[in-house]
Length: 130
Image (cartoon, rainbow, N blue to C red; front, top):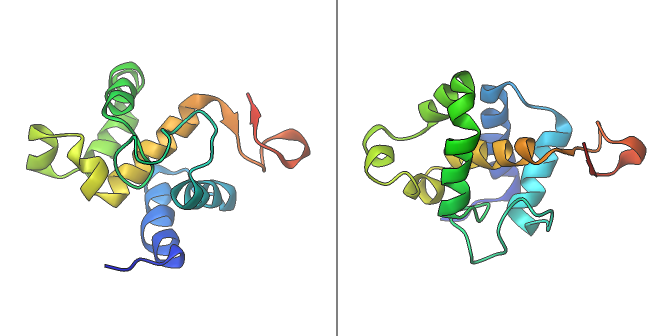
């Protein structure tokens, strides 16, 4: 299957960010660039070390659920709504590989938790630590 950057942006990233109530042009661009180039911001794993589009490791995935989403039940419920009913219960990490919307939501939440700011939020138009 061939997926273009435009298809990924228009049919996965944008709808997922809108579903989470987090869509902005900068958030969309950040995730698209992360999927294509895998920026070295200390958020995602190096290529071929993680799962799915954003190379998220099983440990990062569990940590996000255990240390972030467990304390944010409204967001956790929305993210859980993106996951497959049966597959998530038997192998939650497989969702990172097979469910682009779920993987995108997890990637966004990892970014959000990191404390980095997008261009539109950061002084002088650069990513910066909050």
